[in-house]
Each structure stands twice: as C-alpha cells, then as structure tokens.
Length: 188
Image 1 (cartoon, one colour):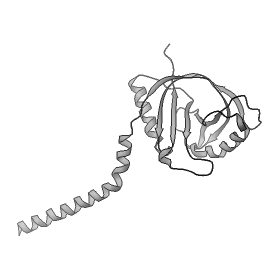
Image 2 (cartoon, rainbow, N blue to C red; image 1 turned 180 degrees about the vertical axis):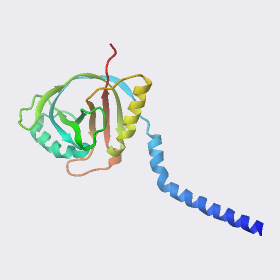
Image 3 (cartoon, helix red, strand yellow; image 1 turned 90 degrees about the horizontal axis):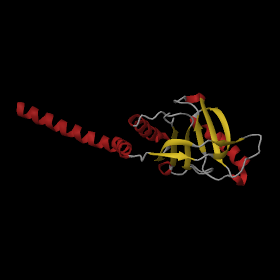
C-alpha cells in the first residue's frame, strides 16, 4: 500500500512539474528579455542645441497631443529627432513637468511654441531598444552606474526618440529606439 501511495505522489509531482514547465513558456520570455538587456553606459558632453518647444504639465504618454503642433510650427526647419525633457527629479505621474522639443535649424517664430537653446551639458547616456513600457530598465542601469561612480543627476533629463511610432502607423514597439540622457553636477 505504501509503495502504491508513493508512486501516486511521484506521478502527481511529475504532472505538476510538467504544468510548471508549460507555465514557464509564457512567463519566462519576459524575464529573459529583461535580464538579457544590457545597456552600454557612456559619459559625454552634449552640445547646446536650438529647439522649438512646448512645456506642459500632464501625463508622460500625452506627447501625442503636442507633437503635431510642434511639427506644424517647425515646418521644414526641423533637424533632428523629438526630445522630451523631464523637469521633475522623480516620477510624478499625472502632474509631471514636461517639455517636448524638436531641434531646429533656426529660431522658429510661432505663438504656439517657444524657440530656445538647450544648454550644453555633461551627461550619462544610454540607448534603449524596445517599448516605452520597458524604459525603466534603462533608467535602472543609469541609476546603478551613477551610484557606483558617485554621480548626482540634475534636471532636466532628456529622452530622444530616435525611432518610435509614426504619425499614422504605430509600428513594432520592439524596434523603438530611445536615447536617455541624464545630466549631472560637475565636481567643484
């Protein structure tokens, strides 16, 4: 009787392990993707850049409300990928202080946008390939680097959307490319 009971328990364990392996097929790919993402962190100087911008308070994903207005104002004078500035030092949710910018060849004159020069900065940078929902992985890599090298970040940080959703078609999120630029205080 005990041998039969033992075999029944072992069989149940085999079935449960098989079920766990099946579940892992759905759970593990995300884990593997996050673990396998490695970020090359570089410190570099970012040159000043002339931009047309709209500063607003809102949610991080509201960039779509303003991008069309910027491109209309800039017309043919745009000369680079859109840049989002984050003026808050930490995550703010719905009331974030944001500024969307488009690099320009010359100062744009339009009542809906501000023409300004973003200052040159020293920064820690990395590039993220993938959906915006996983940008936190790149930020974590930058924060880890800053902690290891005793670097203190200042605002505003920048995200440059090198490849993202188009105006009409969304495209594959796995192919989005975002450069993250975190300015830092220089030692005195």
